[in-house]
Image (cartoon, rainbow, N blue to C red):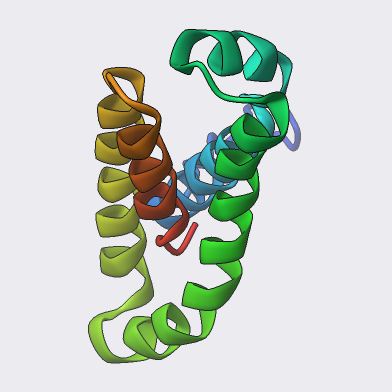
Length: 118
């Protein structure tokens, strides 16, 4: 007679859930992680704090504009495939932004980072 509760069955988390968790973490981190360093960004690039804050706002604006397009693309290409591609794009844009030597390049990388699904 089998014993109940004596062995725990391990359940693996579905791979799609891992991707969704990573995407959610990356989206929230990218959206708000730069706020504490805005004064440093302003000093580094010789712009006002208001101008430096615009690179945070352009991320959210681009994110909002691109969502309907990416929603339709997810139906065509598959949600998981598109999400992985968008995470790669986000990573690339953030690395490029970290290496920016001008405020214009930093601003452009934030636009690129905002144009992804997750």
